[in-house]
Amino acid sequence: MSKQLKADIMLLFVTFGWGISYYLIDVSLENMGPFTLNTYRFLIAFAIAIILAFPKFKFVSKVTLKYSFLLGIVLVFVYAGATFGVEYTTLSNSGFLCGLSVIITPILSCIIYKKAPEKKVTLAAIMCFVGIGLLTLTDGFSINYENLKGDLLCIMGGFAYAVDLLLTERAVLHEEVNPFQLSVFQLGVTGLFNLVLSFIFESPHLPTEPKIWVSVLFLSIFCTGLAFIIQAIAQQYTSASHVGVIFSLETVFSGFVAFVIAKEILTKKSYLGAILMITSIFIMEIDFKAIKDNKDKKKIQHT
Image 1 (cartoon, one colour):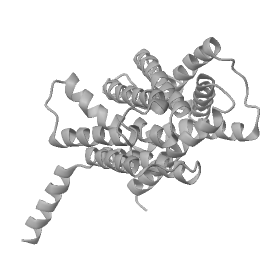
Image 2 (tube, rainbow, N blue to C red):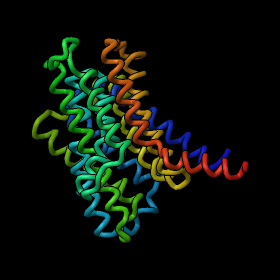
Image 3 (tube, helix red, strand yellow):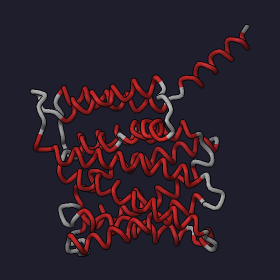
């Protein structure tokens, strides 16, 4: 088995874990507030990452710490959107809407760098917009006020994650930034900010039931701590296009978990919207130019 295939399989497991995470967040919120949950999730993940890779943290640059702080703040908004969103909307909606970062990121990039969007970006954005409408509006195409708050929070989380990706892209280009250290220290910053917010807005406490402990620990260890480490390692052996397509499967896995475990059944209109959104994400991540170039090369070789 090649290193790239092993890396892709590792990332696939990470993505499946993220798909499950929406259900586990929903379970955990039965016993604690969103900020408290995110405090446990990120501080435990940070501790595990430090323990497993301690030798990598002997020398840390100030620039790495600066970007870790900035990214940690952004991640507070990412996970606040996702966690509060799960509390106020369906698991299916939260999974699909939080995946919007795949569409939002290139659009933001075009705005920031003042570049005209590619044709596939425009097509994907239109499909995604229509998909959101079909997924979130009522059958009479009016605003679904029951889920509106949660849907908007999830969209905010997706937008914040797009900002996180662009900021990370800028950070790792800096020669003094260690990407692995950056990915770990931002977890600690996120955890500390959530800890402060949990004391301000909630009453933090330990989980009181076994199922809550299991959910919190799975979210902390597998969906956050190991996920960041696996991602950092795996991306050394696989291409960015592979990573993008694999991560886009998170929406598929979250919808599958919502259907099988949480027994959520969407309307035909909502399923059509979900399909449009998933399709738009794949359109964004597939490099059609590279596929066309490979086909042209094969034709030349045959002739």
